[in-house]
Length: 317
Ligand SMILES: [Zn+2]
Image (tube, rainbow, N blue to C red; front, top):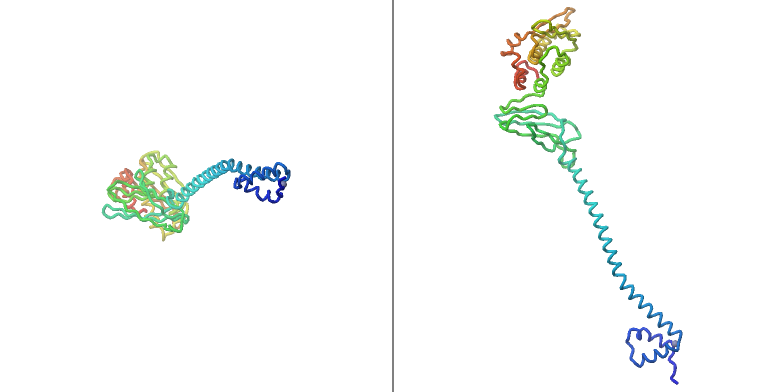
């Protein structure tokens, strides 16, 4: 009978046997032993099972691994594009707020025209905004302001405009193609000129634009429209001192010129006031206005440029 090989030796040889590295004769001994020894047979089965499982895993896992990679990649893509959209949105909002800005109206302007070149100096007075740029649209210069930032703290601007391109409006003022500046007041007066003296709210709007009440004090109104020349009387309620009387009357005379020009069928402007306890009344007619200005007073309301000429003549700014 063959000598039985000890289990320890067989078990040491099993890994080599499974890997096919043992010689035929050795294989024969091992097989014989395994057939007769339950313990080594079990060890052998365990080892081959384990190897088979590992191989199976290798077959399955590459796919899982691949799927995992794809999923991760897609997730990354989604997150990236969401972040990118968000970043773009933020960039648009920030550049709108800090670079391109938006049209603003809180600024002063000072114009000077030499030859055909208008120089418009401006300053934004809202402390939150700085100057961004300007655009010309439909004959208007539109000023864009943006929020103050590290790279832009400038509230001043300077625009050069060639008048020969045509009339241009900025800040309610106009520079004409002939290089004249029409103030906001002249533009305003031209836009609210009134054909009928009987329209008291329209008269009031003109006097409000001129600042009569602000400069000369409160007054009540009375109209004379029963027979021509139609007239408007401003009855000042406050006292005028002797010292101020001359200036008061000359200022009111300037206003009267403008009222006569702006209210078509108004033939005379009167005003009364109390000075040194006496009631004084002054009347200024369209004919008087013609004497002062040199032209039919009504002709000054034919264009905003003519309104401006009148304001210059009577020294109203
Ligand atoms: Zn054995």
